[in-house]
Length: 77
Image (tube, rainbow, N blue to C red):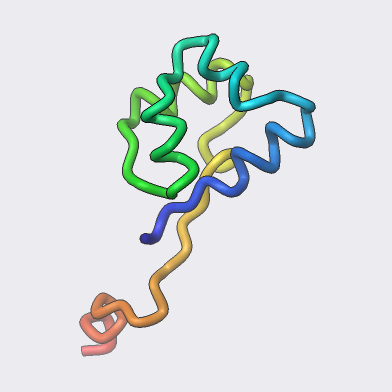
């Protein structure tokens, strides 16, 4: 899992917004569950969240490389 949404939940806490607020604005419960579990979500979901929170994607998500990734081995060839 390389994309994490910890920044989203930190931003919500910082602004005093509950996850339920996003659900009321059209982010379905199953999508919120995916975000909590750092699972894949559709780009349209990221777009909608950014619009609701007036922020950029980098404000709500972050790429963290896997430590045991085979990609690093491929890059070093």
